[in-house]
Amino acid sequence: MSTSPASKKSHPIRRKLALLSALGVAMAAVPFALAAPAQAATTSYACSVTPLKPVFAGFNSSGVKLVDYKIQVRCYSDRYVNITQERWEDDDWPNGDDYLGTSNFSRHLNYWSGPVTISNVRTLVNGEIGNEEVYQKVRWQEGTNGVWSPYTGWKTSASLSISN
Image (cartoon, rainbow, N blue to C red; front, top):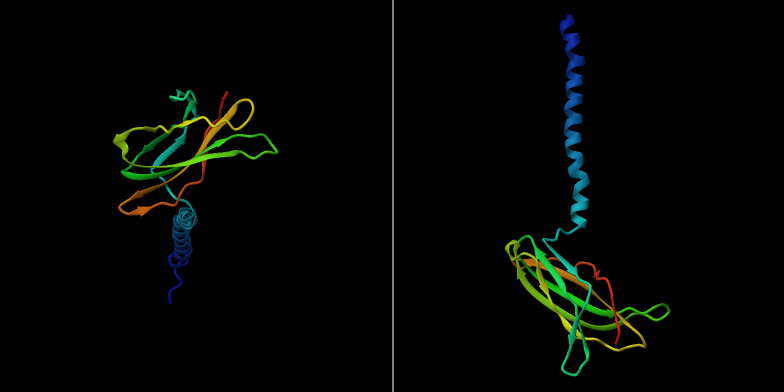
């Protein structure tokens, strides 16, 4: 075996190159290792659904006030959307909020649909002395090619205070 100065110098260089290669592979693998659990735990939705603040919508033929519970929907890919809307009347503690009803909507939207507003006009429920403070909550699921997302959590609108 030869112990020339060139072969002694090549071992430290080889070690440094091997170490740098191993570090490079490890650093490249870290983002993938960290991203896998996060991707498995979250769902990416292609639509946004926003419950808008209810608005006064006039009177029905019996003179009862009407409230429009509008929902704005926008999809950035071709999707079917199922929306569940709950309507509520806000009460102060210790009374719980009053449930007023549920409606369900289905739409087929895509990027070219732009923002779509769904109107749901309902009579104002007279449930207390003084003003009624009404609001809505929505949740939705999206589907494409027969595959459906789970329902989102509830999103709540601002409330409208309206005399009854």
